[in-house]
Image 1: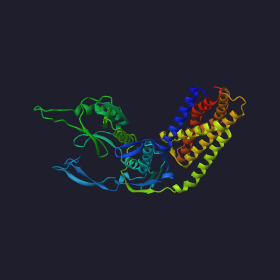
Image 2 (image 1 turned 90 degrees about the horizontal axis):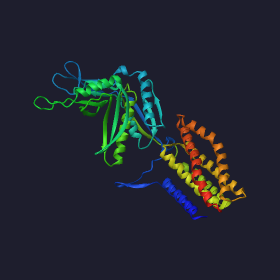
Image 3 (image 1 turned 90 degrees about the vertical axis):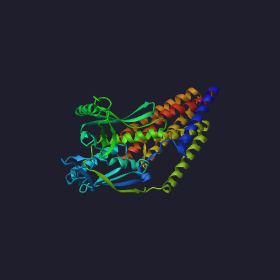
Length: 451
C-alpha cells in the first residue's frame, strides 16, 4: 500500500474514532461551576421519559376594574373613580363554542412550539382542557406560554387602546448586531388599516417640550394581555406598518442570546395564533411516570449487544482484513446516525428506536453482501473491489428506494410513534448511502493491494 493510501486509511480511522467518541460520549465543556455536554440532548417520547399532565380550567377569579366619572376604564384610582370587582371571564364567554375554539388554539400553539408528542382532551361541558407532554427542560415553558390570551395592544397613558391584535398581520423574530452586541427583536407587522393607525401613533407620541423647555412627552404602552412589554415614544414616523421591539441584547454570552431568542419566539407564537376567547389558569400540574424503566431495557440491551458482538466477530473471522475494516465502518455509521438523531431533533419513541435498529441491520446486510462480492471476485485489486462496491450499491439503492419513500410518507403522519419511526428510518437509509460511499468504499479500496 502506498504511503498516500496509508495516510488516507489512518486519517479515516482516526475520524471514525473521534466521531464515535463524540457521539457515544459527548463534548463536555466547563460552564461556570459545572461541566456540561454541549451536544443537543436526545428528544425522548413520553413512553420513555414519562410526562407532565396539566389541567387548565377557565379562570373563575375576579379582578378590580377602575372606572372614572364618565364610566371609562382607567389604570389608577383617583378623584371621582369607582372600583368594581368583575369576573375575569364573564358568563357570556363561557360557551361550548369558545371551549372548542380554545382547544384549537392550544393545538395551534403546541404545533408552532414544535411540540410533536402530546395528548390533549377537552371537557366540552366545563371547558377544562387536559394536556400531557413529555417531561424535559421545555415543559414548564410550554405550559407558561400556552395559556395567555395573547392579546396585543398599544395603549395611551390613560389605558385607551390605539391599536390591537385585530390589525395584526404577522410577528417574526430577528436579530441585529451593533456596538452593544447582538440584539434580538420582535418584528411586528400590521395590516393596511393597522399601518395607517401606527403611522398616526408614531407622529403623535414623539419627544415634546413646552414653551419653557419642560418635557411633556406622551408615551404609549405596548402590551400583551396585561403585561407591558415596553413604554415608549417614537423618534421617527413608521409608514410601512412594521415596528421592531427589542427583547434583549448581549455582547458575548451565547446563553443570554439563546434565552432572548426563546423568549421572543414564544411571544411570537402567542401573537401568531388567535387570541384565546377565554382566560385559562393551571389547576393541576403533576408528573406521570413512564411505564418503562431502565430495568425493562436491561435484557433487550444485553441481547442486542451480544448479537452485535457475534456479528462483528463473524465479519472478522470470515472476511479477515476487510471484515475488520467493515466493523470499524459499522461503528462509525452508528455514531453518525445517532448524531443525526440529536441534531435533527428526531423524537425517539420505542418505534423510533426500532427504526434505528432496522437501519443498522440493513447496513449490516449491505456490508455482508459487499464483502461476499469481493471475496468471490477472482481479481483482488482496487478496480475489481471498486466495481464490486458499485454493484452492491446499485442493488442496495434499488431495494432501499421504496423503503425511503415509505419513510418520507410516515414523516408526515401526525402521530408520534409513526413519525418517530419514519424519521429514524429516513436518516438511517440516507446515511447508509452517503456514509458507505464516502467512508466504507474509501477504506476498502485503499486497503486493497496492487494500488
